[in-house]
Structures are given as structure tokens and as C-alpha cells.
Length: 188
Image (cartoon, rainbow, N blue to C red):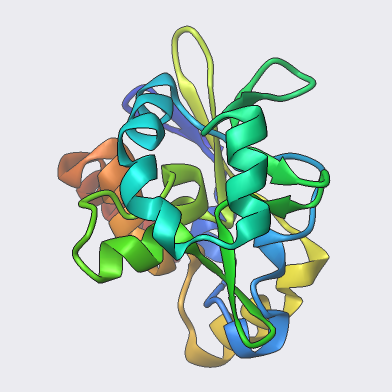
């Protein structure tokens, strides 16, 4: 672990390799697990605002879940998160054949909304936990992502490079530039 500004960062994000391999995992992170995607207060407001534009991209089960639970929910731990369909799939998930995709991201890709998806999804396999004085930035090892770890090793892409856009989105260009300096120092 090392400190970077107001973050405590796990060295795993510099040392472990990762490249999503949707052809292998089929987007399992969107349909497995025991909670929705973590959200910030700002993101709950964005979801409320963009839902009418995203709704046409969603499955009927997702629409029903959102209309019953809201565009976001509070999880059992009190954290804000995306609603689930029958406590399993994210309500915003859609399918391309057997592969789970994000309906929000599809609307974004088509220029319908200007918000890609929750930053927690964009950052995965990095998870950020906010505390009063700092944020913890950790690598989340999940066995469903073993194909992504293998592909990352094959392509020699460390986690922090794979999620560069999301890290910049969450922490800014300067923070990411400092992270790259730390990564270079650790290689020596």
C-alpha cells in the first residue's frame, strides 16, 4: 500500500495484470454477486435524470425492477447501488446473445446520454471505498475474472493501465500521472 494524495492505493493495481475478456466471462460481473453496482450520491441523481433516455435500451425485467425499486436503491449495508432483478442481474443489464452488457453504456455509445455508466463499473476490477479523510483504492480479485487475468498477463497490461480512463474520471489526470510515476519507481 502507498499513499497518493488523499488515497491509499494497493500495489496490486500496479503489479497484477488484467484485460476484460467478454468472450470468456460473458459479462458475469453484471449478473453475479450479491449487490448492485456501488453508486455515489451524484450518480443517483444522474440515473434519475437519464432513466427516460436509457429506458428504451433496457429489458422489460430491468424496467419492471427499476419502476418497482427506483433508479437506485440502498443495499443491506446502507450503501447506494443499482437495483437488481430478482436479487441477481443488475436492472440496467442487457444481453447480446449470451453476453451481458450495460444498457446505460449502449445509450452512451449511441450518443443518447453523455454519461458512460457508474464509475464503479467503469473502474472494475478496482474498487474504491471512501472514508472521511481518504479513499482506499484496491484490486478486487474475483474468480469470474480469471480469464481477464490470463489475458492481461498474455498482453502484459497491468490493472491500472486497463482502467486508465476510469481512474482519470474518478481521480483526475494529475493523480493518474503521479500513479504512473509510482509504477515506474516500483519497476526499478
